[in-house]
Image (cartoon, rainbow, N blue to C red; front, side, top):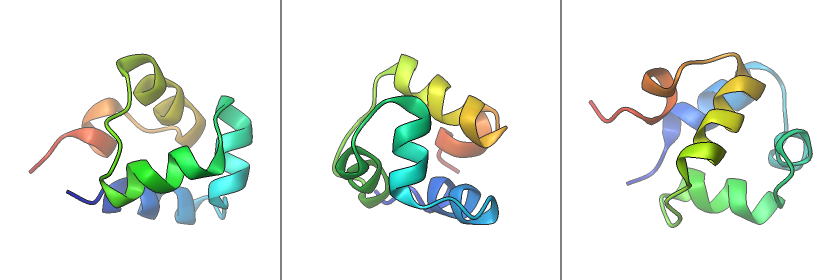
Length: 64
């Protein structure tokens, strides 16, 4: 399942996949795969992404 909430939150801050990846210490491909729903991130990675985007885990990763 694609993570459109992650993509939307990243775009709202005008961050590229590369910029977000650099902020949290992963590769751009990792961010792309999470957004495409092809990679299930660890809880620590989810938390790092949320902190970088000023969002909660529920706002980014909770499925409706």
